[in-house]
Length: 316
Ligand SMILES: [Zn+2]
Image (cartoon, rainbow, N blue to C red; front, side, top):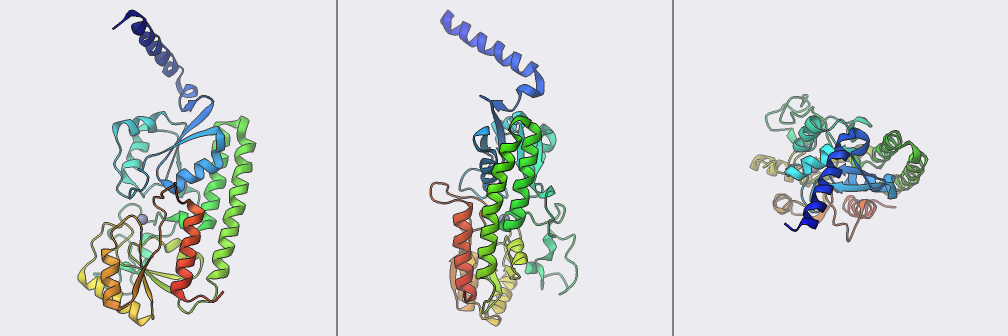
């Protein structure tokens, strides 16, 4: 190695050593911006909107990938260790939960900021090994028994934005007012979205909708709808033939016109049920990953609202 290059590398190594020797203050910031690691798209969107130009946001789930079963690279685990803040949702991605528990004291668990609904409240297990109406606690949803899909409720999502602003303000007090201000703007936009949903879904011919994986329970709960999920809260679960037949029956009985499938997993299961029930299919996107060149949280939420209102025969 030429001497000059050797010296440069040594200097960099020294600098690196000096930086980590300073401990916490030196960690997690680059060029005055805080390094914020986020677990998947809706949390990335929140961190970008609330953090603005004060943060540098990265995402652990590859854009467009299904996030439930994400696996982390060695580099990503190191990013988690070094981040000023790790924004995640405990119980959603086991690999992230584990890395945060082992490698970071600077985790922000979005699920701690809102009331979570129990996973077992879904309809999707009824009629299998469970008695109708019996409690579904303690079944396959081992991880604490809560449903992680909170971002599909604009009100809960707004509450998480507010809490994130507070947290960023404690890490970076000089810019606390800016975080609060950006969260207030986002909160107002989410309130408007909530208003659109409430108005459009107020008067509908039907209130039950069938989805492939059970991701829309918070949304259904907010707007007095009922979701019938074909698979469980993780999309990989293979539904039994009985389950498919049962959902098709239920869809027919409620006069459903549409079985929803989603963008990141195969539509096969939804198509099977739709064929059996003699109805069509359409997309309802759980916003677990978004192609950011074409869409964002708000555009997908509005597309979902249009799809739901059409399928349910809503009048306004
Ligand atoms: Zn999901």
